[in-house]
Image (cartoon, rainbow, N blue to C red; front, side, top):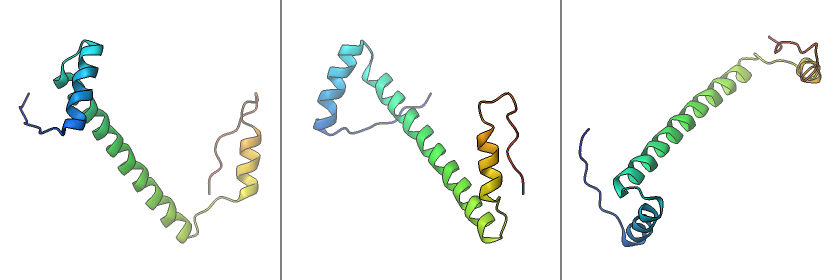
Length: 88
């Protein structure tokens, strides 16, 4: 594990100390947890952006599925005859 120094603003330091005391955890633990969640969120947003670009490129190239096929598929959701997602 590496060591990184962080300067905290007073408006963060005081609530962080209070939260650490309340949860009986160290400030280090809470900071690591917050950074871990932030990094995971950024990775998810990056992945979603990549999926969005791919979807836009599919639309631009004409690779779409008609509304009626999608609606037929959605109508089967939750039934004993649930079908697979429609393909191009």
